[in-house]
Image (cartoon, rainbow over the protein chains, first blue to last red):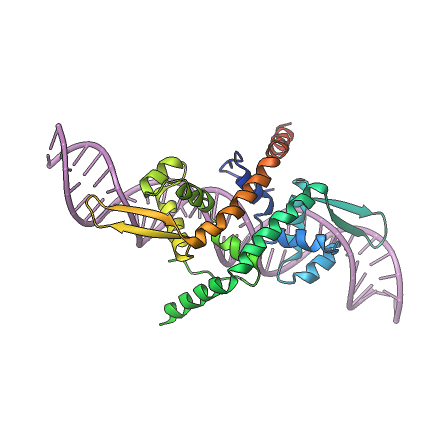
Length: 122
Length: 122
DNA sequence: ACGGGTATGGATAATTTTTTCCATACCCTC
DNA sequence: GAGGGTATGGAAAAAATTATCCATACCCGT
């Protein structure tokens, strides 16, 4: 386990939220689980560009933070399913609003990026 | 200037938002500028644990993304002030909602962190 | 026995972000 | 001219995050 060297300051709500959903795939994981994708392998199929390794790690962090619950079925082959907790559910409206703001300015932002790349080429 | 090697995917609103406010001090910068702290040195005094270097870099990114406007006064000693753009203003409600969610769960989260540290010591 | 399915994690490399250190340039006051 | 104020950025180190590679273990069907 990696030990952080610079202590983080969780004195404001924003920093807490960022600690919980700051990971590269976390918000998408929450979204997919909310949408009925519960098993690790299924989640991976929905986001092939992520590694199983990273998904497992971020899922465990989400579990540690109380956003998802990991249910192990005593079967063979092994089956595991993740579900949102009540805590995790409460986060969805925030994620949706964040996503909505971004969508409202998506084109403008993409144009910005494109123009910058053109400029770099020229 | 640092060139990214892994291209980012800005196809969803969430990723756009995270690109804009994902930096360690960016949301706090926006908040302070909104609250009337406009000059770089004043901003630094409000967040002493950040370096002037980092603040400058993140301010330039916020400017590039169109969230703040940098105004240079042709005076001596030099004076520079940052202001939120209309674009930046539209982001504030989202930041406030993120912060509010975190505040509502602040104690629970901090207890989680504390317990983990105690566990590590034991 | 081999290939495929499930789920997971160690070790290390690569990438990205942030920090640290030091440098510039100009003006003012003492 | 020494010390303070303003604003800014290069170079490199440190820290944090993510990616890559390979390994485990068990079961099923062929």
